[in-house]
Length: 259
Length: 220
Image (cartoon, rainbow over all chains, first blue to last red; front, side, top):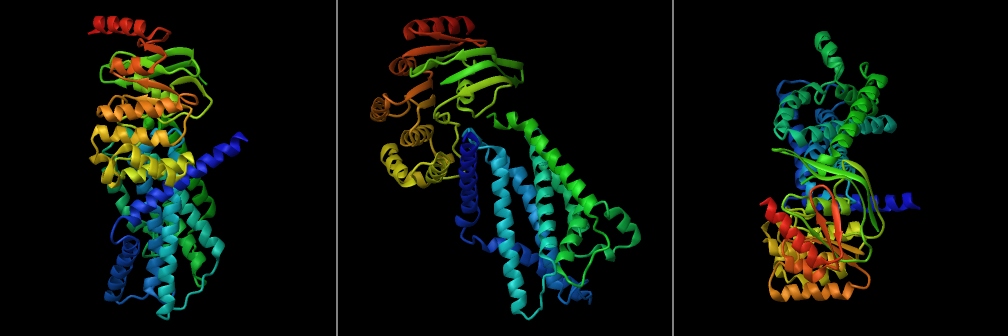
């Protein structure tokens, strides 16, 4: 009974936080959801321009646009989650004054928002590609979804660790954005691991995001099966980071609530 | 019902550690309006936040039964970037209250007018306390935890607060922190003195105030 009650309170808190965040992100601004569409659109357009300028064809499939899309959407899911969780806990500090609001509720509501908006945008773009006459057949939904889940879990883990560090070191957000920037180029947004030179392959194969990206695309493209992605390695790294994140949240939760 | 069991709470400040409660075991008197007295920095607001559950003790246990409000204070639980109405909706959702009814009540009670649609960060402290007070009155609580916001505003508004509380007397009680001895006297049945290490309960509020004056006189 008590557990049931606690769960219903948590459910109410999470839905209130989700509504509040959705409204402040998409409801109050004039352009609203347009921005959610614009960011991936900009990335895709830039890379279509670069690839056609270089006279190169898509690494997999017929369309450069779809290839970039299958890289940029998971990347944005991961990257937005990290930044929205690391900044979200501080930005919503006032709400922690309500005793029933827990930092994890804020994290969960952010995951719900990011996942649903990225999914909607992805579906819209895929629909647009089909409209343009590009043939798309998704190879394996389970593979696609499991890779997506890993992007989310790793994003939560790093977001939580960052949030914990931010509590004592506010300047850390600059440091993180500096060290995370190269990740965009090293995580396979616009290439697959097969295209790397042996030297680069060796180094980048430690990057779990590259594994996930190849995993995701292996699920998307019938014609593609990555030689890189290692299920065991990716799972271990992701869950270790996630548990460190949870631990960091636990250890700093007292300090996080102080005004 | 609220009970502290071996509760310790300290803050790190620039001048070292400030201990607010040191291994305190204490049961708060039930259904009594309690005025909390203590010199600046003794930890009155923190005590309220501990009672509410907004902050956790360093060690020990706090046992709480019943519906307690969030700590109603200036720096309280409102999100500064959101409007009054958005904050109101958020509180209604987490406390499972009827948004429509609460909105009506708050609009009428708080006298904020169009300001209710402005972000909280543009509010004066008087406006914040009016919103916090009206909102907490609209959502039914058994114990109201009031941090300084009473006795703010003009005479008319103060009377309104008083009347709203009198109406709830039967069902609800209040634990309050205030720098105004008059407000403490007006509202409290008993006084709780926070000496910096322990909690003392005084049945005679006047005597407690006299003792508090003595204590703060020596300290300043």
